Length: 168
Image (tube, rainbow, N blue to C red; front, side, top):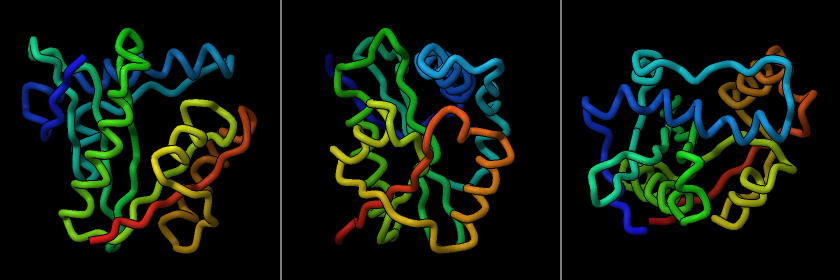
């Protein structure tokens, strides 16, 4: 399937929450949590400075998105979501590559993320896209670890930080 990756538009914003919640059903089915936090609202997502790109089919249906947040001179891949009906078609990979390109164009030398180590479409997928496991080394990433600990994400599996250099 052919998709176009483009910057998010105002009309796309209401779709992001639904796309993430639907995509999260795969993780919920795998991890079986008693409770799962819903996706951020459009307003909450927009409150984080950054880059949001969407994957749009030829019929103009938005089927996925990626959100890179900017922090103290860095770029962090906060979310990649693709509607489950369109999974396995390379859309997630296209979004990750587009996020890397957009972060590079914005002047960032690296892109980081946090994810589950042993979920196939998490750390193994990101490793295949060039990301490598690394230790949190700054206040921003240590804050993410603290937030994950407070939310109890570790009870569902090992969490890791990954990063990739974005050469010019």
